[in-house]
Amino acid sequence: MRYRRTDVAGGTYFFTVNLAERKRTLLVDHVEVLRSVIRKIRQRHPFRIDAMVVLPDHLHALWTLPEGDRDYPTRWMLIKAGFSRRLSRGERRSESRKMKGERGIWQRRYWEHLIRDDRDYARHVEYIHFNPVKHGHVERASDWLYSSIHRYIRAGIVERHWGIDIETDDSGEFGEG
Image (cartoon, rainbow, N blue to C red; front, side, top):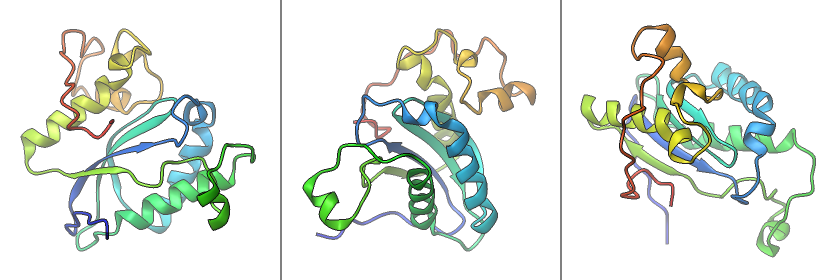
């Protein structure tokens, strides 16, 4: 069965990307490596990061691709491969991954959602920024270091205390499964 993805040129997408071993903390342990790899990929394959949060074992991102461009799968493949190459080996790998010569850092697939309208966009930005609170890492969204919420605060879009009274959405609709 072929996996089908939504692809709208110049679209805005929400992503959830998970580590293969969900109990590891590689993303925050090596956040500078991740940032460096993303910067490098953005130079070669531009896209705008509208919002993003990096948690210990997964990340959420909201990207807008350039007009006429729909190739987010290549960008994610390059980001995941670039990050993996810069880490020491030693992760658990399935027989399937060993046979294919793959690392065992990331889950193979990721969740993507095409943003439909302004309301959908705002909901996903809020979800991204509230995620560290939802997972119990901090009490206030602004206390999490690895989040674009700090850019939103500096721009005056949200207050530092934003998110204190938000209810979590456990519908599974955001791809954290």
